[in-house]
Amino acid sequence: MRARATIWSRYNLCEVDMSPIEPTSTRPPVVSDQQLVLIVYLLYFAAYIFGITALIGVIIAHTKWPDTGPPLRSHYQFQIRTFWIGLLYLVVGAVLAFAVFPVIAVVVLIWWFVWSLVRNVKGLLALNDNKPIQDPTSWMFG
Image (cartoon, rainbow, N blue to C red; front, side, top):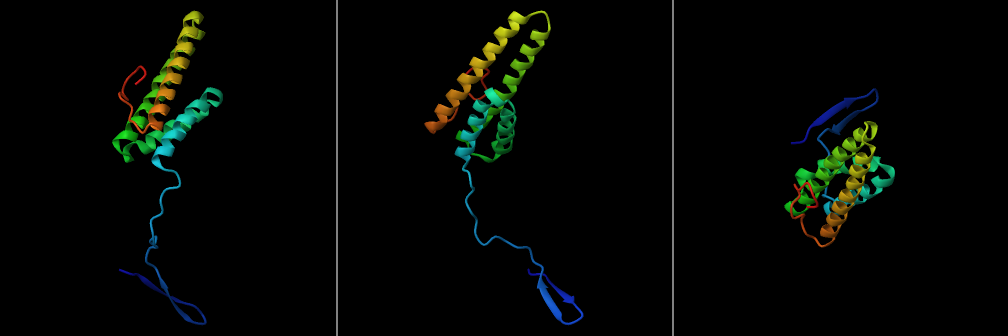
């Protein structure tokens, strides 16, 4: 149904089409879902230097997770859990560092680094092979 409006001006009468503009064709997304999963992994790697990129990555993963098929959904779930469990390790390490257990804090922070690096590399390799993450809910290495 088309809506029309009549506009009167001092000099002439004009009719304007007020129906919503619909796209004439659907364009493919600029970045595919598989590329977005790759971008999240790369943002996680960049977070070792810049930190904030992990937050950007987890926002992308949380946003795209419900809209993808099972293979990529397993990667997004794995990435989301990597972020939140990793944040837990970092908070525990920081609390221990400011408490009286700096040696334990260093061990926890080294564990976080190795754990997150292995998870990101395994996820990236599985993505490259077009495979889902075997156990995306794992606390270890998937």
